[in-house]
Figure: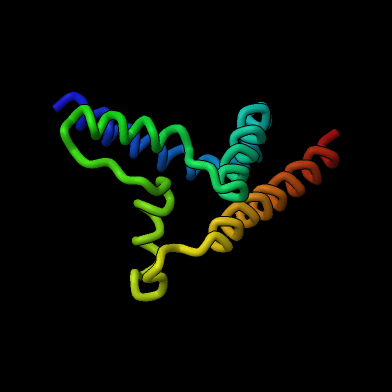
Length: 127
């Protein structure tokens, strides 16, 4: 029971991490000091997608699932949980293409680049 709870909590943490990677720059517009945390986190998140690594939180969740006697999964968090919600299996019967993960990484960089561009514009006008 405890390990299943820890696995589920890891999923929630992973989702929060992904949301912070994508949209954390919006928080930086309000709390400027948060940029010191968000920039490396966003680069890490984009890098995982661009390079094709699996996030350590995926391994942690699988560890807890195994301890709970449940089956883990071999793919990454995005591919296992998020892509099935976004893309029907009919579109990608052989799995989500590698180029799709690269597009996700580029999307993260572009969204956050636009947010930080705005951040620097407003910063320059206040000083």
